[in-house]
Image 1 (cartoon, one colour):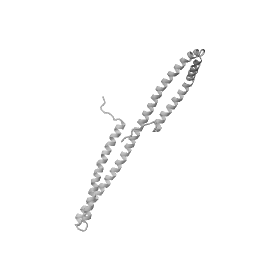
Image 2 (cartoon, helix red, strand yellow):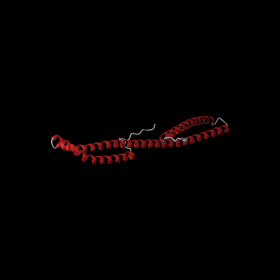
Image 3 (cartoon, one colour):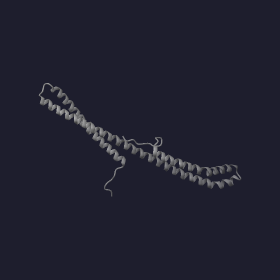
Image 4 (spheres, one colour):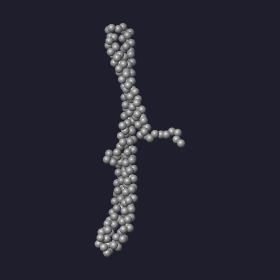
Length: 190
């Protein structure tokens, strides 16, 4: 019984990204309102100069100054928020790339394991075929061809299998380390 379920890292990062984008939308709308207010106050200030009392002009100047500070503060908050969004997006992309690389390496490893089982069965079958092919080869010419083929399988497949295993291990490491695009298909976060 789990009281606290932890989200998958990708789901958590997507939720964080959605929340940050929601904050960005909110701050952007506040910024738009503040800019519109600053523009209206600037026009009002321009209209008051020379025609209104000093108190009215000072009051509009104070409101305009406050609004300009609010615009600057919102711009700063938006800039910080945008940086956080960029960092979270990069973290999500990196996480998805790591997951894809690990999946691709596991798939290759699983495919190699299946290949190795079938290759081992072929070698065992060739070893079992060799004595029978030798007996038949003593009397039938085609039997010598089968005997030669069985000997080649028994002699050449085990070293080739070791090379394939080494190359598979190396390729799995490469996939996890470097994530080559021809081997790793990454789901990009939108």
